[in-house]
Length: 115
Length: 116
Image 1 (spheres, one colour):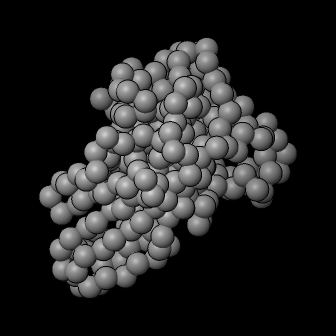
Image 2 (cartoon, one colour):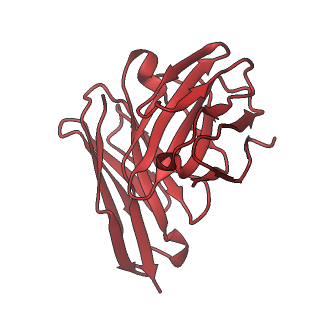
C-alpha cells in the first residue's frame, strides 16, 4: 500500500519567515495530494491540494509543489503569522480502483510561529 | 448544514466493554471513513464506505466493526475495548463526484476515547 513520509516533525520559525514542509510518497499511481491543518483540539481542515497533472499551486501565502518523478511534494508558507501555528498533515490517495478515495496521511509537522 | 457530526465528544470505557461511536453527515456524500489519531502517528484509516451497504477495511481495522445502512450514517463499533484503542477518532466524508479522489474530505469534530 501507499506510504507517506513527512519531515520535519517539528518546525519553529520567526514570525514573517517562511516555512517549508516536505513529504514523499511511495505509490507512483497516486494522483491527489491534499494538505490539512489541525489546530489544537480541533478537526483537520483542508488548506490546499494539488493534482498530479499540476506542478505547483498557490493560494495567497500558501503554495504546494509536486515532483512526480521524485515522488515528493512540499508545502510552503510565506510571511508566517502566529495563527499559522498548528499541526500540518500531508496526504496522498492510494491510487486507482476502489482505493482511489483512501487517503494515506503523513505523521504530521507541528509548526510553531514565534512572535 | 451541520456537516459531519460525531457523538459522543468524550467517552471512558473499561477494558472489555463495547460501544458505538456515531457519525452522521448531511451533505449527501457517498464516501465516509473512520480514522484514529494517536500522538506522533498521524491519522490512520480504520474502515471506509463508498455507499450504503458497502464497507471495506483500512489500515488498522482489527477490533472495530462498521455498517452503512443509510447514506447519512456510518457508526463505528468497538466490540471489546482494549487500552490500545485509547485514541481520538475522526469520521470524515466526501463526494465521489470528482476524479480519483479529488474531492475534499470533511472531518467531524472527533471523539476522544479512553479505555482503562
